[in-house]
Image (cartoon, rainbow, N blue to C red; front, side):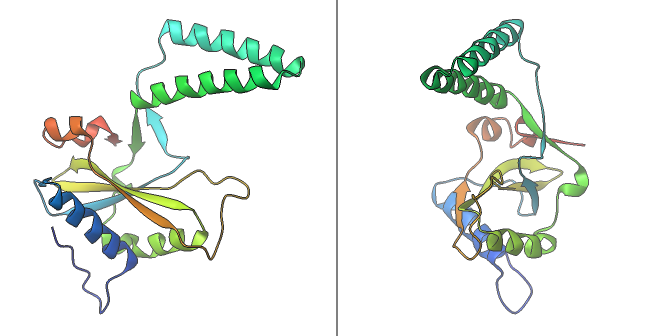
Length: 184
């Protein structure tokens, strides 16, 4: 798939979109449409999905109790181990959920170019371009932005733009984006 920017030069966003679709084409992924929409995903993007099961909630409560004791008793090894398990529980829950965005957040690439340039200049170590699926006859490409932690941004440094293809379950179910993204 070739994407064109009708200005006199190809913007950074269009260059990276071209890289994404060229790579996906080389590995045999064919898209049902050539129209693209961009959505930005960051730590503020809402997630929806099934609530944790009774066993997960009980486990989390016990872990939080153990964590409180380990913190009070100054046991750093136990704290690290408990934090790891809590993180694992969170990652599992995230796998069963999807991001929730408004229809207005799906932008034409030419309307997102300036914002993409801003993100590149902010100093993130990476940004991910990820193909999420098809919504309303448009391929949805997410610009995934990492969490902004103190000291994590390095303005003036090069930002790596990583590429991700669609999940296998999205492709096998007719490119339905709703496995990853709820558009309201």
